[in-house]
Length: 191
Image: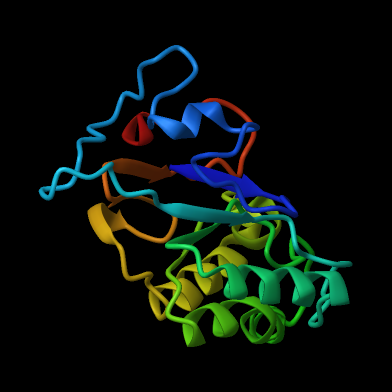
């Protein structure tokens, strides 16, 4: 499993820069995953995952920079098995912003091109788009509404609190999305 964030080159299992990907093991030799060979005796499959994060512009912005559009085009061309976002997709956290228009802009720039390419897009809330503080309850409700309509096509392990926190699998890898939008320790139910 290779997770690439902000990379301009693709890694292949034979790349000298990524020797830990050759045998599926971490540098210490233990992958922690069941990376067994496929039934035909070949090597385990390689899953490609891209990470897009902190794409938001200025507070309330409904458009995205040309660099964001270019990055999304590159990701679509790369055709990963999954795209993750670790939050701050829109620039909220202020009163009197048009959150629906902000999400419409995000979906047009990022979510829709990924969906059109049939690439699953799994999001994690950020403090600018789904803050857990009470004063941002409406913003958070809009985040939940937006993403309940756009659930990724993944194998969920736990989706009871999707999209705020959830877990899913891609091959042998387990992904866990936590709600860490406030200062302090994680709540017990997330542990």
